[in-house]
Image 1 (cartoon, rainbow over the protein chains, first blue to last red):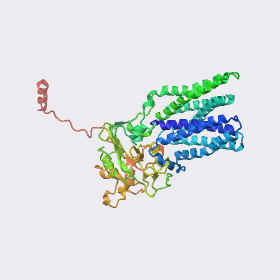
Image 2 (cartoon, rainbow over the protein chains, first blue to last red):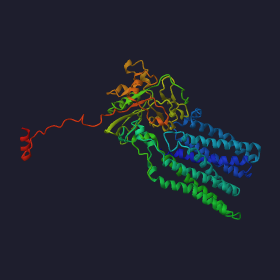
Image 3 (cartoon, chains in turn yellow, orange):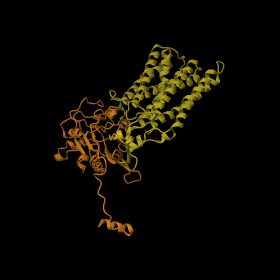
Length: 319
Length: 244
């Protein structure tokens, strides 16, 4: 599939923003967040900015952004419409939670409830995003049992890395948060590797079943057109296959391995160290960003669509 | 509404005979000509005479070589919207622009509601929907909804433009929901197939597979001809002696 920058930016930016919002909301509801207005301003401010930037970016790739309001109407059947509805609804508790924390403190009853509702809305929105992809049967790389847990785990892992960095900068490094980030990173890493393995061994339809000809090898000998058309531009993207193995290593190194090591360094530096844990927490964020962008680029660029079978595209993965 | 009708009164669609199709592209050009002025008009062309021409077409004819037990054969394969019974292209639409008609099962796009998110084209396994980069909406085959009910046309012309154009009768139009209709009987006789049925879209359009050819080429091979000029030399002399 053609990796459109707007959608890569939307899924990564909003995903991390929703993860950050969910963790802060759950933390506040459970009474685990330090009562710091600065943490609320920086943390929730960043979460809402990343969510909003992502949502705006996703409307830029529309042919008619001025009609985007229509996308709230078909939530009965469409995951994209559900995503639109939930993303807007989540703003209500998120704004009450953020404003309430800054003005009345994190321990106010309504702030805790709003935090919990914002967290639920954030996670539900990530679920709808994942389901847009997981429900597309023509793209077996997406329509499998890994897409939903991977999206949720990435959202929480990137949110936890962000929260770890922000908390270290604004309040003080929190040991429990470090271990939470480490656990989410390990879960996301394991799920992503399992998803890649699953996709590499997929038995995909062939040109023989796409054309209904059934038996025997079916070889494309003439296209209907001499140049690329919409179908090939959108669904015949093949660049990633060439460098897939190297890009997967880069994504794993930057999104998982390096943040993991940095956060561990912060954890093992001891309670006396003040500068090193903060530096490590911030560097983990800076490493995670290009890593997740690479992973998401691969998610789109490596995905194979059945329509390309009609053009004789070899869909078998080559190592 | 992008929720699908639970059933449709009729299931209008096409039956395409891969045994007969000669890949002449007449259906392709006829479709383009009618529809660039029809319901989904225009069918925009980008750089039609330039180095990289592109544009919206509802019908594309591919050519394949298929290996069979009796040697390989060439198969021409017209590809267009199959007007599926459970089309995910409709249910994924967030705006209600895509819909399936409960009267005849035709899948259409309301251009005025389309936001151009392209998700429906991702949801179509058959690559039937094409995005118009100029009008910035999604376009697709209408089964010539503006021909088949058009009382301004003579009755024999009230068929999709591709069907009217086919010079070899490889394209058939009718109600596939009626088991007694000529198209349904044709599908039954010729064992018509669905494309990628495992995906569960339940296409209405059917494809008739190429007929099996007789095994062994002896029966149909032309007889060997005698050489026109007689061979010279010793063997020519032997040949003449023995022939006489």
